[in-house]
Structure formats: C-alpha cells, structure tokens
Length: 246
Picture 1 (cartoon, rainbow, N blue to C red):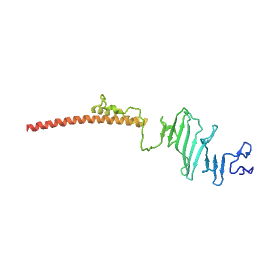
Picture 2: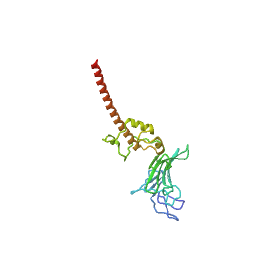
Picture 3: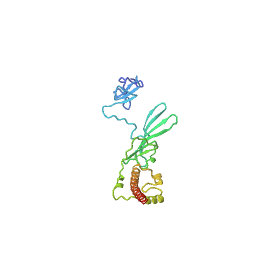
Picture 4: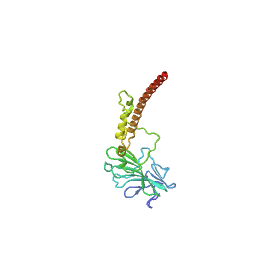
C-alpha cells in the first residue's frame, strides 16, 4: 500500500509514523480495502472497525489533557445517538457526567435520555429523561416521567405493623378518631397533603402506614361486630320475653 506516494507498505497494513517519517514496520492496524473495514489486532475485520485482543480490550477516547468533551456518535439517516463525557473531573459543584442523548433531524438538538454523575466523593447518581440533577432530591436515581414495572421490591427498614395485633396496643376509639379527623383533616400518622406536596411520597413508609391503618380498621370492625352480636342476642331475648307475655 502506498501512503502519499512515499513507499509501498506491507500489504494491507496501515503504515507507522515514527514522528518524522513513515516506517515500513508492520503495525497491528489492518485495512480491508475490499469491504472498507479496519481491523485492530485482527487481519479479518468483520465490521467497519473491529478491535480484537487475546487480553482485555480497552478503547480510550480522549486524554487527561483534553479540554473538550470526548464524544461517541452512532449516526443514522433519521438521527443519531451520542455518548458524551463532561470535561469536569467531578466535584460537588461540578460533577463529572456521562450523557446519553438522541438527536433527530426533525426536531434537532440533543434530547437527554440518561446521564450518570460522579461527585468526586465516592458516590454517584443516575437521571433518566433529563440531564439535570435537580430532580434527584437527595436520591441516587431520578426519573423525569413515569416508571413502568411488572414488580417493585422495596427494602424497608421501618418495622412492619404486626405490632397492631399484639396485646397492649392502644387502639383509638371511633369517637377519638372522629375528633382527630375533625381537628386535623387527616388520619393519625398519615402525612398531610402539604407535606406530600413538599417532600413527595415515600412508597415504602406509606405502604407500611396504610397497612397499619387497615389492621387498626380490622380490629375496630371485629370489636364492632362483637357489639352487634351482643345487641342481636339481647334483641332476641327481648322478643322472646314479649312473645311469652302474649
């Protein structure tokens, strides 16, 4: 192969530049001109760029002295995907990020898909559907939009409310509960609408709280049923006495 008409290199191998001139040393970069493919570490590239190694294969984009964002772009006729790393080394005020965006020829601009951030203190976070960490609210995962899942498992450290059924649990009477609701406009132990609006809804703790209310309601229904059975029994006795008098 001839490079700029300088010399003939070993067949199909990209010539090596030693800093001042091309050498005739065989490099591991192979050109398959017939199929327009480049192989690194292989003489039979299967793709436009095929990197092969018997050891761990690492591809580096950018250098430690880079002042611009290193990008990797997957381009198509209707748009392209871009993976981009921020210049920042990471810190609380300027966290380093790896951003995945999509650009369409119709709407233009890079639309944020997902970003991963590192703050320089050993912790990181992920945001989906946006490229800003303001949505996180102290969490390690933030999603701008709805989340769909077939199942969600939450590891909750708060005690599950089986204690409601244990002897000694103080259950509010219905009159006490009515008075509390009239005064506060919400159930005891349940966040107010303003608190939810400000702090959001914690699914794990709220599930535990709701189950506690269901268990308390179950006990109240059991107690109410006992009273109904006593009233029915007393009513039956009164009916029997009246019938006997007639």
